[in-house]
Length: 319
Length: 293
Image 1 (cartoon, rainbow over the protein chains, first blue to last red):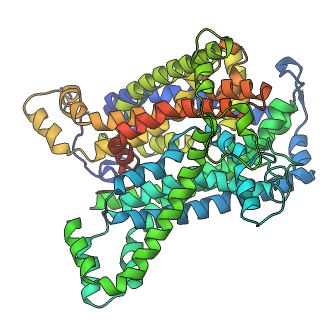
Image 2 (image 1 turned 120 degrees about the vertical axis):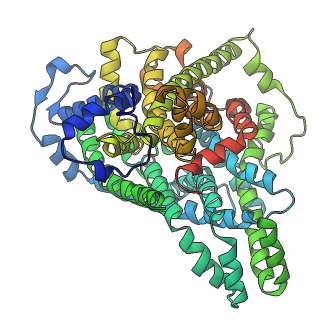
């Protein structure tokens, strides 16, 4: 009965493609039932908000979000953003935050994965300890570090004073110059475990024979890493870096809870800025315009993300 | 296999030693970086408010006390009442979200993994793309939607929105699992006369239990830790979830550091325990999609 629609075989789709798309869609109507609930949820909570955000970005909406009183103002919200100095400041912060967090978290995670690859006593415990920061809530992490950085009673400053590096308690997060690096340290603390997990799994796919063969041929540890291990991890690394970059670009909780973007915008990144514009200063139109710009940036990043993922996919089907 | 590899590396002691020591030292530094902040949270949480605010700090609490924990967990006093209610709210929202996300994601992920219907790639990637967009973009329109649906200040608003980020992740994780279950099993069942749905229900479902467990943990942790929607949709004190509740509470009591650390610790306990107990599934699920075996 279902033999026509039930194409269980992994037949390559492009062969069966074309002649009649509509007929094909009709024939696989049973397939769509499986994805239907997911698609409905996605439409309500994704497609609708995106449409609405674009709409709002061309209007001036009064505080309190009184939609009846919104006024069409064309692209004024966009020009307001691009001509403000805060925009450039926040963009620079976002670039620094995203690049530094992503690269350092990746390198630290890579190092930890390599160091944990060989079996030794206590390895499982160490691995669990290293992953915990990634599991706990970012709100808890923010409070822990805020307390560590505290300008009067913070333990980090106290250690530095006791060791004689400084003569008085430093101001980590109330200082325009040190606030962003201090927050990046917290962010990396939460994120390097993710890179570590991904790369540990990646390392297991590196063929042991190749490493041994390279060794027999007299390759040094570094050469074996660079010419055998590393090329095998290229796919995982790309996906990991992309996911980290997206997560960092989108981060909100750590800067929001720890500093709220201050002092004087020194730790505002795009997302915290948009949130403050919308729910703090109730400038809904400007916030929506920001969101649309962000949306465009994410589409570009998303293009690379999908390409990296489908690269993996086609390899898998080819095999 | 790895034991063979170990034996081989061990033979070449001389060249390896430098790297091995570098690895050990690096690992030590990373463990300190990871564990010391958490240790300091625990040490602070068992100090009195006075002991926590001394300079130089008491490295080890001279008079350890569980007063902060007693206060937070005591249903008799108002702080404890609030905290326990936040805890329950978080638990309720996370559990319902998880159940719904898994129920919707299982058939969808299966379809994406097995069936070849037109638009499959497009739909799958548009689901994945959702993961790339920050909550903030959706915040204002969803707030309007919730206001329209009359869901502001209800847990329903959170459950519905948590599905938006829970679902794509769940579908992605589960698809990785289904991809690695051999198609031949279902084909055999079909030859024996099972319908396609029976093959899915009776053959594939039992095999994908580890994947479902892993997906459930991810959804639960994601919902448990979520902050931004909860902070926007909820204003009434008795509805708040833990992250927002703790933030509201301690923005009024800014100097109760032991209490804040104790609350942070208690908030982390459920997810860390979940993670430690089900670690195996957790790690495997995440990497299943990205790494092919």
